[in-house]
Amino acid sequence: FATNVPRRVPAALPPAAPQPPPAAKRSARVPLTRALDDAAENPHLAIGTLRWPEGHSFPHLEPPSWAAPPDLLVGWPSYVRVRLPNFDPVKHPGDPSQIDGLSYPLTLLFAWQCLARTAPVELPELGGELTVVIMGASQKAEERLLWETDYWTELLSFPHVFPASTRLHLIFSGPEVAHHGKVKSERSSRLRSTCYRGDLCDALVAHDCSPSSTVLFGFNTGCGSGIEEVMAGWAPDLSAALQRGYLAFFSCANDYSDLRGEVAMHELLGSRRVLPPRKNPFHAMSIVTEPIPDGATVRSGEWCRANFFIYAVRGLERRQDLGDGASSPPGDTDGSKSLQAHARELARFLKQTQQPSPVP
Image 1 (tube, rainbow, N blue to C red):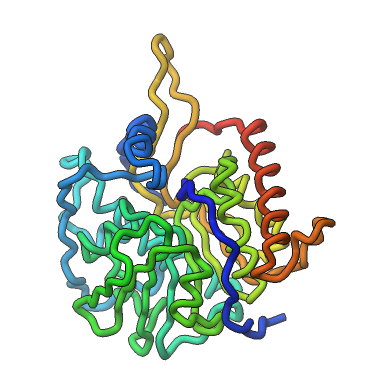
Image 2 (image 1 turned 60 degrees about the vertical axis):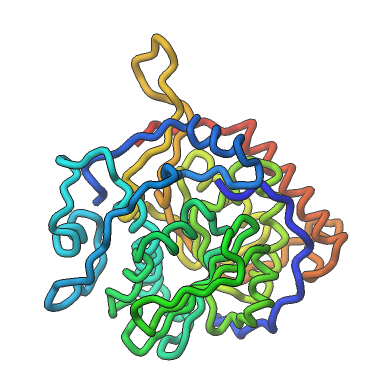
């Protein structure tokens, strides 16, 4: 899920850039009610698929000890074998936080690798500084990993994805970001991170981001979740960013709600798909589930597993004409309101027709 905060009309964005024509063996299950209770305590925060208790200490990630990094990212079994030789999910089944946390940078790396192998022309050229905007970042997930772990430095461990000549600037952007304006310099000069509290388009303007050197990544955004405020909040920003030709990667926490809804949302926006949806072999270990009802023997109902699916879009395949100005340029209040109304209508349909799939 993503933040449940209505968004403002997107600011004017930088000029558009030309556009070219297996998993972990064990799972930790977390009751969905815990995430919902967490949201009730602070309604300004997102309902997330992952929540770690206050004071939780994340396992330290040692620098790579391999003679040479793997040439291909395949999935958790091979990664754990060469990168985390001391990790034992059998001996420590109660703390999946290292795998859950590493799922975020590894998902980004894997998604980039997939697009590089299938449609490399869609990727920006590497060699200078690449800006990656983590849109809809949560202070209790993506941003917490930034300040309490060094897991994001794993982005530098695989030169077949990001070569040594490339520097990365991560911008953690979202209405619930806690450390607005703070910059974190990692142990490598190739990586720096900035936090921005605000909407996506505002962050792009504030940091003078260009589509030619910037990509967007939304982890479990909920932009197709069937929640009206969430979907209406995302629609104007996504539309404005895609109109300018940004490449945007997404991960989803399930197929029955998030993936299904996001496909429908991008159809509404007219997004151009460049990486079809696929299962992500670097999904989280934890599964957030509804409690088993009294007397029931089979688990059913809603469930989430962070970063379970990935896909990517870039620009618009068509300008969606909704017949009432909803395809107006960024900054047009009437067009944005109309688009939000259509997103709300879509959200109601998705919620009414949602049928949870079996819990993985």
